[in-house]
Image 1 (tube, one colour):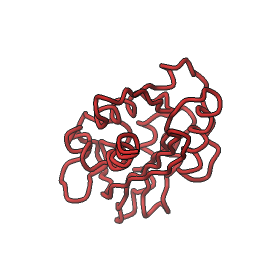
Image 2: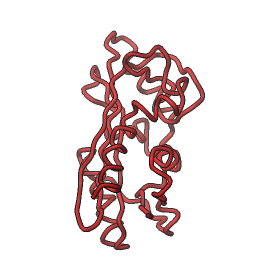
Image 3: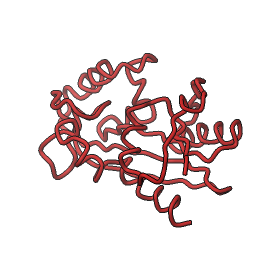
Image 4: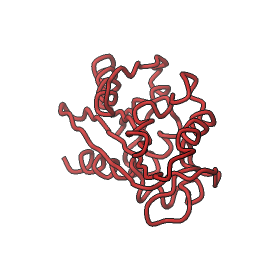
Length: 191
């Protein structure tokens, strides 16, 4: 079975691809020749995921899903949230994003945070909303070289290492996209 993941982010495609059974072939927007940047104009993760999934479903007529994910920090009232990739500006510079988070947390003791994702799915004529979250905290140094995004500064609850230190084996069990992917697998394989 082929399923479109409505993203140009190859890190996300690789992460979810590791979670799916081999019987499901995951294709990115690049794989179907869609090079358009789909504008995320929603005010929530769900709205942004739905915008992207709807665009692919109605333009190409293909079964697909999209995610919108982000880091939410309690002391920053949930920021960066839906703006996680563009927190320091439109260029999606993760180094600058991390620096901005550190700057805003400089005088704050509460570093509680969580990664959250929403998958919006079009499959077999039906629509689904799936979600996943993982709690943890932000550290004020980068550690590890695995993963991507905010992984080097995020320590999941119950661990002493960052996602970037723990690597795919742990992240693919407890991560926000891993949790949502388990629900996605149930939809794709049991319906």
